[in-house]
Image 1 (cartoon, rainbow, N blue to C red):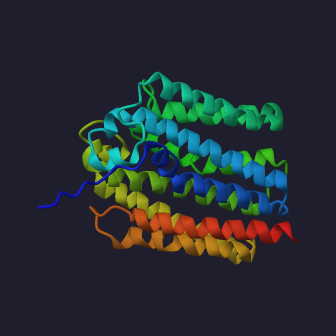
Image 2: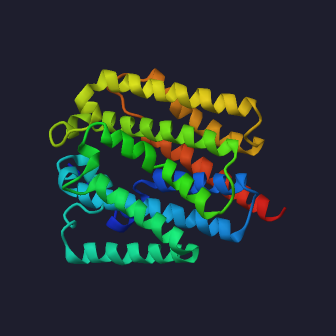
Length: 288
């Protein structure tokens, strides 16, 4: 009888592919903010890259602090590169060096850039690390995620690219607050059985049925905001493919059962398509 050995991906591969949807979406959102302000510039592209790198780093910190609890679940062990390594001096030292390197990228934006980077790190630390660990404090977990994960990168880009606020920015921020809130609830629903054995959160506090109703309300709010502002001509037509890429994921929230998690494969496909399209937009704009 043959034995099938399933090899866990190399830690460095996991480190850069886990949460690829998060830093990929961050790059797209930062790019959209820059495009709405007037199109392509090399400085704008570098800014979007800096913002995405910060998102990657804060999610890596989350995995570092989550390693002890993630070790109790087989699926999470596959997604966390720090399992069995979180306390090693070279891991923590390496993360410190990488963090300082990303921070130096923001030095070109002066004190405002450094303050934004420091603020992002502070939020990431408070969300993930003990003793505060906001991700396990019902209500504060949703608030931090809603304001920090997608909204903060967009606002940071808006501040650092130095342009005024337009109506499309207000609409984007409203959509991102609700989408980040919904994404947090989806994650909590996915990890419900594991999390309730270790730590608390909003979904465990109110129950899956009530949490699902909040998810529905946030999703409806996203649709109303997007449709209204699109009908007023606030969004350029070339942004429509991003909405179309994410639409199946939003609709899937209403069609799946209470126990069925979101489609992680669907998320990766949608983000991959959106990233390829974003790269194409950057190329087109660079030639205009």
